[in-house]
Length: 435
Image (cartoon, rainbow, N blue to C red):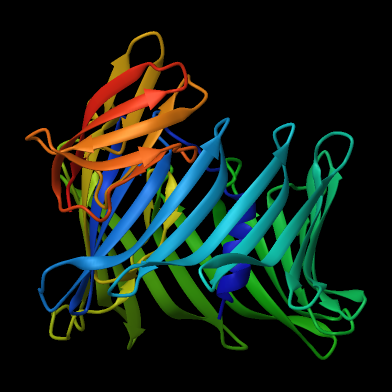
């Protein structure tokens, strides 16, 4: 059977992912997993980058309560930090944080941090090295306990495009390769993924054959037995007229012939895309479960449902399965059996933009958790006043150098704010806390 890790590594390295300038962005999702619903809100900055991802949870149709939220920071179009906080029934607790450092537009350093006594403590770092042509040549990941220790390394070898990628783990002071990806120099669409044992002997390999568009046509996994390679499994792909995958067949090698394991086929019916997964029995394909994606009038997926079937009848409890969906060009594989999505147009995003000598933007607005970000062509915010709609001063904030307004302790509703910047210019705008 195919190893998931190898398949994901290859697809991430070789897939040509295009980012489309969509008018519509996901604003909320409702993911159902058993008796639990996770409701997530997405907020974006003026460059349409997700800066706040906030999730609430409901169990057995109870009212929604806080669960977690992630803040993401961007500079010059690049993500520089991502922090996740979790709710412990009384207050928000720091959980994990990732920071990225760039030099001349190249990623040079990434560090992972976790919460310890309400402080961010660094536990891991990755160092990136480049050649004189600014091509990535190595990534080294280290972990920290009492000192920095090597953990993983990835080396890149080029012959025009990438020719070889070698992944290694630290064995004391030495690096032990455990996997290698090789692109055939004579046929760049033929790729081999190999895994190795502790003495650099190949254990398994997967050969990927792609079409001229870089899409996989078939994958064959083999193991080395005795003195020869033997087939183990094979995956075949088919595409529709728009070059989207509409079929996949998984086979196993039974020493004499290829045997069926699983099949999937996608088809579109008006505003619905149905992907059916089949299992073989008595030389026939029987439906096991389906993914149904319902599209809205803008041809965006508004609901995705996984239905467990057997012999064509829905006689089982709902199947929990992975629901592959791209949220704003970011791959997401949530675990559940249904998901609903709503969208907002970036042209109509509810954000207040105020213009005087300077420009200032407050977002997201509405904010699901009461955290607002301030963006503009100013150097410093000196003071912020928060008022009720009746004009009563509720909160005063001084020297908000973090460029945020935090009213998480206030009830949901509409508030007025006055923001003062370094040259005494002031801006007035409403703040909406929606939950």
